[in-house]
Length: 101
Image (cartoon, rainbow, N blue to C red; front, side, top):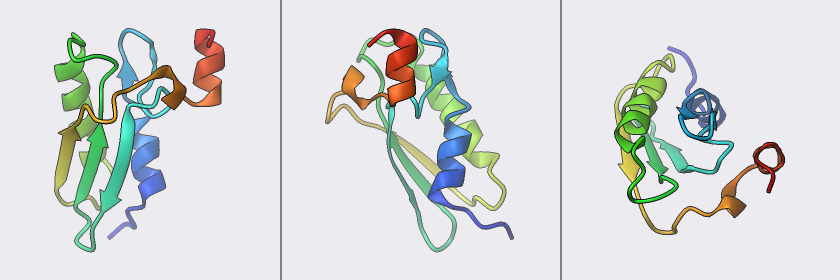
């Protein structure tokens, strides 16, 4: 079976784009944590830019799909959290530049 690493999962998750910002969710700071246990079960903690984000259900399903497509992943749990709240400071330097921050 393939090795499942945090970086591989993060790379897969960054292929999920926020439909409003048109950037990967890792680059814009929506993915807070990725944990992988010894059975290759993945738990990802993420947030949205706001509680009323209309893209929330789409992003949630795309997170689940992206992780499941990583070779070797067994189970997937994607947990939406609101604490700490997302702020633009969580974005990568490239995303800040591209969005004018």
